[in-house]
Amino acid sequence: MEEVKQAEEGGIQALVEEMLDSQKKILQELRKVIVGQDEVIEQVLISLYVGGHCLITGLPGLAKTLLVHSVAQTLGLTFKRIQFTPDLMPTDITGTEIIEEDPATGRRRLEFVPGPVFTNVLLADEINRTPPKTQAALLEAMQEREVTVRGITYNLDPPFFVLATQNPIEMEGTYPLPEAQLDRFMFNIMIDYLPEAEEVKVVQETTGEPAQEIAQVVSGKDILRYQELVKKIPANEDIVRYAVRLTGSTRPGEDSKQDFINEWVRYGASLRASQYMVLGGKVRALLKGRFTVSTEDIQALAKPVLRHRILTNFHAESEEITPEDIIERLLKAVAPPQSGL
Image (cartoon, rainbow, N blue to C red):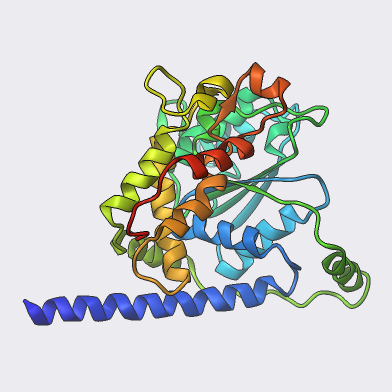
């Protein structure tokens, strides 16, 4: 039994080293076309290693689409893009049935034509440019990894990721995503303008010689193996409890221990937030060379996990209090584990 245990541990160690090597290669390829945005890239890759979907929020022109396309290239995964517009229909995403005629017999039958959701990496570009009815067409695919059309269920090949971009909801012609769909996204990643030095570098590179080609460095099968590895990384019960307390503290109610939550929050985060903080913490720990999740990992991922799951009320909006402000106060108010592990 001891020999079996040692062999398993040796296999896990080898897979961790392989994953870290792959991470370095992925970053090396992405930096051929993406300048800066290291934290954004890290969070996107964490979501891929977990198997979660990602919502990327930022103003136009901040390379959101380029980032997603580049990630798909490095992973060697099939990639499709949907440009969301006000007139987009649900069947434009999932696919539809058309009438086909058999040339030999002349008989007609319905044939299902798969939509762009049948891919490994789906870029839902400007997802909040289309009404909620069409946005909701992605719900089943994101949660169950399958699509149902006219009562027939079609499975999506793993791995399957939705990487959606959206413009800030204050912009004209945007539709806020329904709460049920927001909750399906592991992270809401914010992209901001680059510092001047990095913006100068971007302009120089994009106005000169063509950018270098991005090479595939891992495969879809590798990603699935890394996802299984992540589940084997331990998380101390105190750390899990800390993640649960952070999530629970976002919910208003009579038993809320934070007065500012009742004052500013309409709805708090669901159980998925705790799960994603712990899973994301496991990946972050591995990428930092550790085998256990720490308080730092949970705190580092609290904002991307919680910011789209906290719905503020009128009082918060009138005082210009954002979910970011609330999360920062929670991180100070909720005591971390004594051990820090």
